[in-house]
Image (cartoon, rainbow, N blue to C red):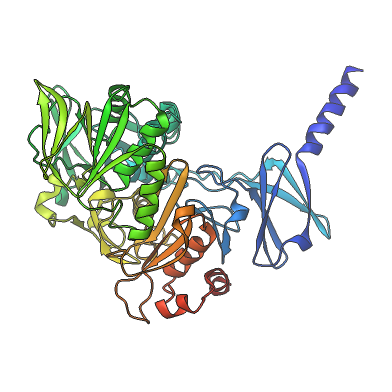
Length: 545
């Protein structure tokens, strides 16, 4: 009797894992997702008579990939533009950090049966460059992604990752987007999980500083907290030292209660210090606005005031109309703005901050001051080969033979030209490209074939931006920013035949995905085309067939 019951239970489990799908639901060159009763999603892609089945949730934050776009062999996430190969689920573009789980399927004639318990094993042998040593300096996104990608694409040599931080690599953008708001615990910010380094056979050296790099010798000097130093030489040297906050030369900037936000420790200090306190944020860029949003969502600060010299927020990114909508959103949540004056000095009582004196002579009382005044690349250890505005590298992030510079410090050539960009997606792109260069893989796109992308999360709304524009003021706007439903295109001049170089959106994700694909392929629409009603989605799909 027991055996019969067990067999019945096994049959029920097996039946639950089998999903039948009609072939006719999916056009050739297309895809479709199927939501299941257990909240899982199955994604099916089709090329002529070939079908492929995947976990349909983006491994980044779970977006339904069926709501995204398929452009050629690329499945693009609608939220953060992670991209995957439609034939095997391979990761093509971050911010996802791994590919899609692929399921076995059975052809039943007019239908398909997907077995979600039968996953296709994609593990690779770590049998490449087994006698080599790669040293990575920096535990941010670029350093992490280089190490992670090396291990998941066959690198079998030794990997050492050196970080000044006291923690294994973690998701820094989520500090201002979720952690500060109390929406995410520290453990969920760890990149790859708490055991990532040990599981991937990576030597993680924390609380250590690289004081010198000798690029021609691929040699570094490491110092620990006690001042002890040692030299190490590598076969491959990856420098990803990131950026550090700019602290303006304000009088009083060193007072207790003045903070910047770059690390987990910074975020913890700000969370603790802001309880029942008057908080002033200096800076109206996306970091300043995210911190304002996070503190208001946390609901612990007595008040939050944002100081800006101009009367716009995120003024180098979005138009005045979009800026005004963002200001309105923040004011509705209780944020106060002080526009039109800079900071003259930060006042204190003893060693503790007490207020901020503005350049117009007025003073604002404050218990906590947060400086969101930009960052500067940490390029000191590469000064001998470094241009003033970033380390000049090639399309594979290479500085010298076997030496790479990436992330916030790199001035590299992407689809938009040579530039230094301080965004998470770009740092992760750099890691993928560098790992492929080390492994000499020619099936991975170089940086020249990629475009920048970033997003900012404020009060649960996600403003997404793709490309790069010198200014947001040569723009075309569709929709209503006030209702958080718009897309805006940016141009480098006002010519009718000028192609858009960037776009931002709230709520029109598919259009932004289509624009991004056109931009990546060198076919961004012109001002005249957009004004004439150019259909980006149709064009992006047509170009990719």
